[in-house]
Length: 216
Image (cartoon, rainbow, N blue to C red):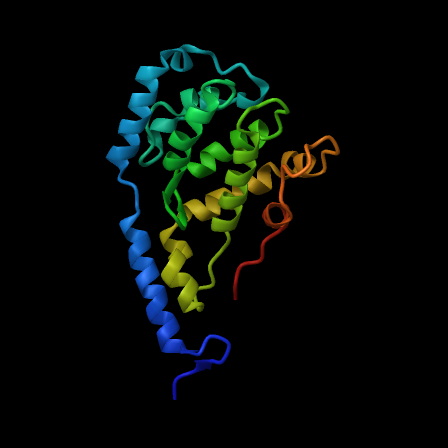
């Protein structure tokens, strides 16, 4: 006999079929690497000053030392995009280009996300950055999508894939752990503008900096 969800009136089979449809739709939204690279190249053509600027802001220390070219699917222009976030005029235009680069699909971060997280965490702490609310939201998304997936949870595996197929999740968890003090400082900053961090985002980010237990 099929399990039945009384609250929705659907059998477990119906629910699983719905997840399959959603998963297939999600895969149709996966961004092609060539599309991402083209968007970055277009941004650099329109804002060459971002590529020429130095990574000397405290939030970007170490950015130039990252070998971005060795990260699968990572264009060479990531440092320029991170610098662009600091520019009041260019920041709002930079953010969607960077977001597309850091996400592979609705439910999957890209291999670039773990390397970018240390800088995103520090950038989100910059008081006068124009895209600060969006950066906080992006951090919350990364925290949520980097959670370990229980291999026995068929529905979550269907939507998010197995951890073994997505090493970027472990990389993100390691980045959050390594920069836990900076993230906690951001969350505990008494001078934060009201409403900058929603209750849900705060809870999600707090979970990211706590020790995570692997599913049994």
